[in-house]
Amino acid sequence: MTPSSVQCLAGLGPAIKQEWAELLRGEPTITPLGRPDTLVFLMDATLAQLFAGLEDKTAQQQWLKQCAPVVGPVHNYCACGLNPLLKYFTTGELAVRAAAHGKLGGEIEEVLLRFRALAQREIETLCSVCQHKGVPGCCEMAGKAHHLPPSHSTRR
Image 1 (cartoon, one colour):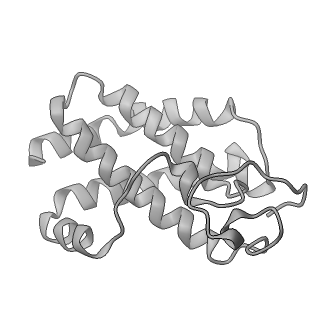
Image 2 (tube, rainbow, N blue to C red):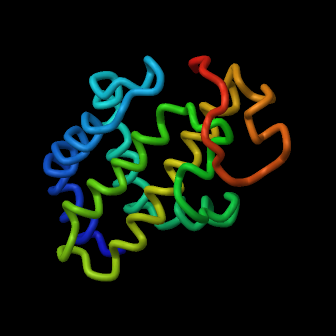
Image 3 (cartoon, rainbow, N blue to C red):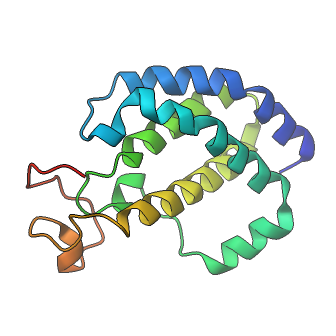
């Protein structure tokens, strides 16, 4: 991705955040950590990580060699579906796509790949300390790699 494209995307930051916040507020809250008014405080840091990752080609290439492939929607990264970052990153991807539509051409796919990679890392990190890990109904116990709706009513 060219430096001018990263700069263009960074200039869209306020529009991305506004769209993202609106989308988040339209989603139901599953857990207390998933409240939109809590999650909006993560947006600046998330976008800064995205822009930094797109600017640093060496770090991005090293990361791509070390990480598992990013495949499918972010909901595949959490077994129980209670991770509040699922809706955060799903709505974030929609906001990035909407704000950058027509402005980045084919480079939007690189942006979205990097965004999904960031989402995958953050979601899996929170899932690694999940109190529901291995609980019946959490498909991680069965080793399944796809999302199943929660079958228990406890909260994260």
